[in-house]
Image (tube, rainbow, N blue to C red; front, top):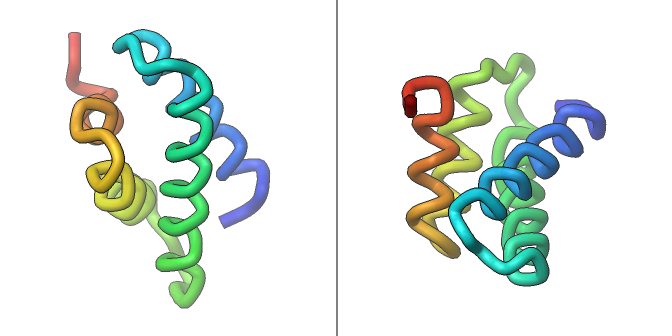
Length: 79
């Protein structure tokens, strides 16, 4: 996973966090930690699919904020 991909994921998560009312400072701290941990867990894979990324980030986000994890996991299906 490239640095550009992680920056895009972090940016999108910050937007989602703001939309559901999570304070920006708190969101920034745990979002970056969750994405970095997810990236580390996927680093051993040769090929990382979108589903792999969503699953790994969701798993890490769930530790910090279940609402944001839910929004991220269902981002393409929520209307």
